Image 1 (cartoon, rainbow, N blue to C red):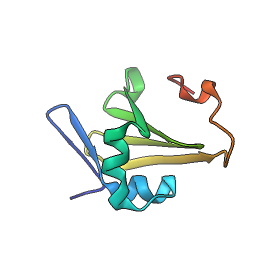
Image 2: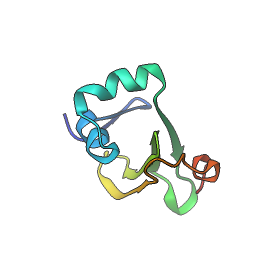
Image 3: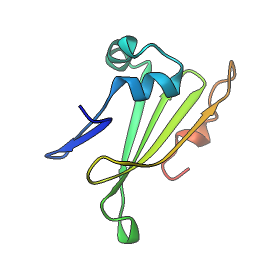
Image 4: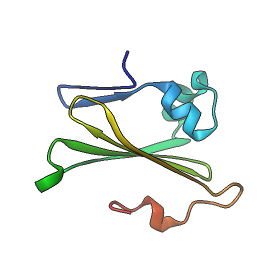
Length: 96
């Protein structure tokens, strides 16, 4: 499976991508998603960003943001690690 797969409006991200960026074993990612310990948001680009998606994942004091094209290729990757500090609420808002 490619790192990110987009089909019929469904986006799947490989657990190794999330695990590496969030400091987790990839095998733990599915259970943490199911339990709500990892949360996410998906934003679809409009205008000049049409065909792109911004995927944001949160776990503990970490945030991972991926910008991908319609084929699932990662165009940008950024992460923030606040260590033991909780993520500022402003980081969880769309567009930040």
